[in-house]
Image: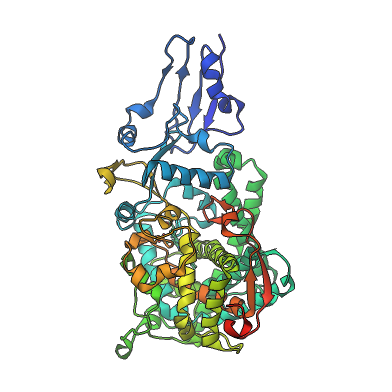
Length: 594
Ligand code: HEM
């Protein structure tokens, strides 16, 4: 008789524990196997598991509480891969690299359809890929709580907008959404231009070489965010601005590691690792600067107030005079997103001008001081940190994918350039807000890139109530995690003809208008959609048009060679490799490249 003792920590099984990875091998031969498990993230609900096996001819008795639970009864009706007692489907992802996990997910979606369940240990996860089901979740004001996977952000973002829930989320969203009013965004166009020009110059030494364009997109995105979110630049903050930018990038990397290295998911093990020490150091830099900037900004606010200089309120900045209510210059994306029913649709006409420009942080301080919103300095810090995170990796990945796609599809790149040539000719002038409204083809290319390579490839929610969805009338039980498979929805042939082909015409108004709104959700949708959507699209148009007016981009690899990485942010595991050549400023017909 053999006896083995296994320790389970957290929700799934430790990759590194020989007892566990060999567990399935023990079952046919061992006489008795004991195990016990402690759930460290179970909010104090630690559990003890026992399992016992006797010789081959006798039954082995397992205490499987899942089988008796409500979760299990509902989950039984939903298709998914077969489960192993206790482990569920956890073994499927063990020893798989992020690239293989993407492929596995896609394979299961193919095999089981638009609703798939898996068990990770005792956690039930249901993947949704039908827009009708997705609408039930995303359009709801009830199912707004984030899944526990978002907890890795907590040390950094605290209870900021991305992870907070309940009344706190509601009241902060009410305060923050208007700070993304298009009037405010228009005042950022100068910052977008200046930084885009800077990155074009920084990229110049790469001419003729193969390099990772993401490094540049990431750097310029942080610089733009420093100015628009906090009102500072790397330079004005001497070394600390630079250190901050580096720390944001490295923190994103650590969080990514925690998502795909299973052992790092357990706080107990993570805290023992070198990543933890690095994280503490980086958070010191990030929080140190945010606190310092908030303190300085508040002091300036009071000094100005004492001198009688009071900044315009958010209400004043975003008020639209009656005579400019006609909105004749809507962008395509406003039509594409109009079915989202979120809180970002304002009239866009009133331009407040650059002189009155205020960063998001200034607007929050002003709202807190004039009594419009009840928000503490600590909460302001959490929101600024959240915007810095959410605005960074998403747009860096989005712009990198788009440049790589244009590097592959050179004919489409030339069409983009011809449109830019029509707008700018051979001049070097910066883009205006009005120019961005004329970048109609570029906008279609951008929307199509976000369809094929959505920077946030999935969204996860925790259900606090049972929900009946449209597919087969399945009931998703309270307590399960729902994952919206954005990547897969965007590749569904029912909604996109030839879904794996890069085709900006998918966003011709006549094509876009025929689709279910929730079949295109790169920014999520509904009340908890991305608050930075308009900011992102405007910034990306200025940045990408500037890069493409200066360089031709060339990819040596084709799209089928992009190795995708399953992460919180979709990336290329092989790097965003690209070559650039200086662009001759003539239309493609003259240059002979059409
Ligand atoms: C291409 C660029 C972007 C994409 C694809 C994107 C996508 C998303 C998605 C899918 C969500 C929902 C996440 C979830 O529920 O888990 C989200 C939330 C959010 N995004 Fe973005 N985002 C982008 C850019 C930005 C920018 C530039 C900012 C700010 C400057 C921003 C700020 C936020 C915030 C604060 C939230 C949380 C909203 C809430 O929970 O109420 N995002 N974004």
